[in-house]
Each structure stands twice: as C-alpha cells, then as structure tokens.
Image (tube, rainbow, N blue to C red; front, side, top):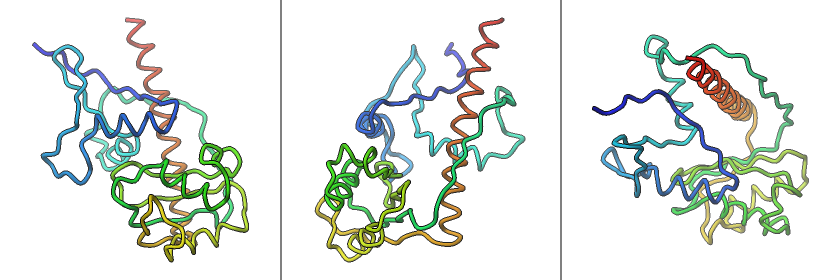
Length: 209
C-alpha cells in the first residue's frame, strides 16, 4: 500500500524569481476555484505531494483547533524574531494588476526612487509582501524616507504604475491597521522559526530510533 505521510518540509529559495516560478508551477491558482489544479505535481513513489506557501500553511494552522493538531507537533524552544518598527513606513496596495509578481512591484519602486530594481532591497531597504495570484500587496520600508508619502500618492493617482497598470488604491498604514500588519509579520516569522525547530527535533527523534 501507499506509505503514510510522516510530516512536512519547508523549502527556501535563493531568489524571489525561483520561488515565484515554483509557486506558479506547483500550486493551483487562487482564483481557479475548488477544482483548480497545479500545472505540475511532484510525486515521491506513489504519493503526490501537496505544495502550499508558508503563508497559507501558517494561516491554516491558526484556524486549526487544538484537538486536531498533529501528534507530531512538539514543543520546542527557538530564538524569537523581534522587530523594532517605526510608524509610516508601510504602503498598503490594493487591486494590483492581473499577472503581477514581486519583481514587477520592485521594478516600479526602483523606477520611482531612481534605483536599479536589483538594488531596491540593498540600497532602499524596501521589501514587498506579495504572492502571485493575490489582489493586494504591501511595501515595507525599513528606514525613513521623505519620498514614501509621495510614492504612495502617485501610486494611488496612477502617476506611478505597476506593469503599466494603475492600482485600485495605495495608502500608508496607520493606527490599528499598521499595528496588525507588524503583528502578523512578526507572527509569520516566528511560526516559520518554530516550524523549522520542530522539523529539526522530529528528524533527530527519527534518527535515534
């Protein structure tokens, strides 16, 4: 018979492009309905692997009742992710164009700030929170910049476009929305670290048997 699944694995990609290519190839599109299928399926023996983004996996874990949690989920210690953030550095972008990806958003950022796209992270310290198929995105700046407000305004009025398309809205997060964004981001990072620590501990247990 088929072997039963014994756990999950996290795969980290060296580049955003590689991650987005794998997502498009191995995960059914979010807007394809319940019957949507991925372009390709990975098999190990007779078993088909279920592939999902870490973000979606974490969201499902949050909604799962304690009684249904896997017996393989073990308590572990791990170094908590901490972030000291400043107000006014996250732009919420809604209604991104169809077929958008992180690189297209990064290209728009680089064009406005007059920086090469491949230098946006290093020189501008700007990060794009977005997965292919989503309708909304967030652009997070680590350091203060006088042009953040102007960039958000020009995205909103269509002066700055993403992939030659105007977004539905672009606003700088404030108040509770801003606090929730950072809380969710920090939770995401800690869930990732916890999952890695659990996998490491489970692997040690299996090798010791």
